[in-house]
Length: 158
Image (cartoon, rainbow, N blue to C red; front, side, top):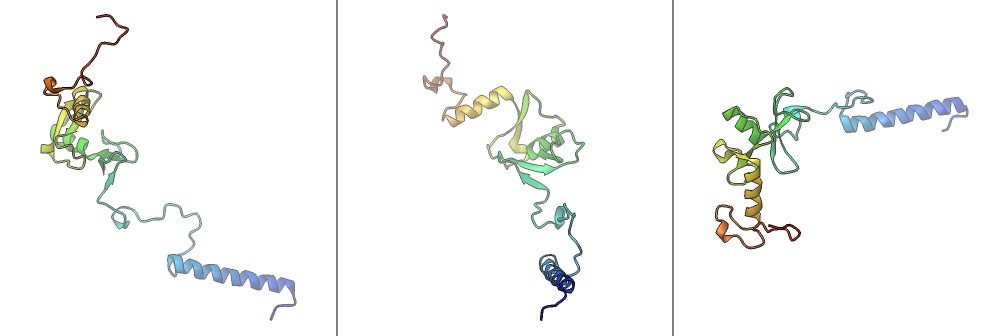
């Protein structure tokens, strides 16, 4: 039966709404979870999170990223480093730079065993991969097709 007094009717509607919202909150977060207003970042961290993958992520290029301290020399972003760089740094003490980078011998980006990794200069590494994609080996220049050979530009005189 509705109230004749509009003030009491409004108070009753507010109580009903609060009771409904509390029931929905309890269904979503559990009974006694408390008020979640303003609690951003209240999700589970580290191993408690169901999506935890032992501290590993896969980059957009397919390389494995591992969690390292933010002050680590290989760290970037939120404290991650490429696993292949980290393995080489741990075993050789060298950091990749503008000349030297880490090469996967079997070209499997997720195989980061130390015996599968080697230091390679950037230029030969790039040419090695481009020739493999074209089906030619840079070690046998006699087998290269004419398209792969360096040609003189028509406006240059030899």
